[in-house]
Length: 395
Image (cartoon, rainbow, N blue to C red; front, side, top):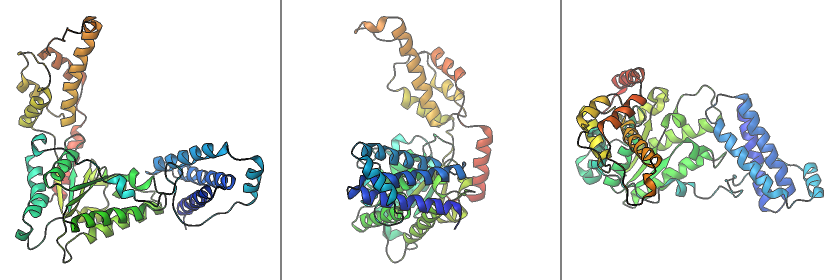
């Protein structure tokens, strides 16, 4: 067993026993084991300083430390001495959650969004190619499954620069087919249930399959897919087990006599970091690109619709100035122009008059913002996306 696996297994064992003793009221011994779990986690972080899940381990250590503080006030010194002399390790059972309670409950209940994403296709400005591909893969099979004798894709990968609408697109299709929407990321899978992450993946997919069996489509949306399913040089046992479980579950939702409407939509800004095994399982690989001029113009119309703008504001010219800007960049430009205007309004002292209103935004206001902001996506990044798309595209 490698040092990383041993430390991870040790931390899990200490945490399991600490929770068990905590529930039994043996606070002194629980504190000792929480401390040992913390030590193992911090050793793991020090041993692999560049490991992707170090943030998760630090969060767990902090949670255990908070539990220790909560217990210390009620523990006598004699009980603490007894705990030190009767320390035990290993064991099984529930893992620790953020409140010092067992984590063997139902993590999938926290992963499924309680409120449906209220995003319509109209709110996804542009992205016609991506929308068409997603409709063909998800919407049409849900509406007329009888027209797909060979089945339909279950894995859809959305990749491209940050802020271009990948999450928005996933939310819109969930709204369109009235699906249960399970939104997860690496932290939600790994951090709260140390040692049981792969079981949580299984529970998540079981819940999604049950939803589909009951007649309601299910979408498992994995944001920042590369952090959970990427190639990492310093992987430890927990991450490897989660990846293998995810591969198994994705294979399990492919047609095997049942036409269940369970879909996995992955979103990533770094498709080149994905494990090869996962790339193959996403039958649709769709580039979500930067907006063209027409799309930028429509975005500016959308974002400025709630603002008071002067008649001298030329949205077409602003769309030209916004070349290379992502959708979120363009929204930030409009927001920054409004914030600057409101700041000027308050500094003038007029805001104290409840009847007073700020002036309208002018072309000069927007130009000033464009001079102060640069696109969040570089030309080198765009070249990388285009090269990867040419190598792996599957629309």
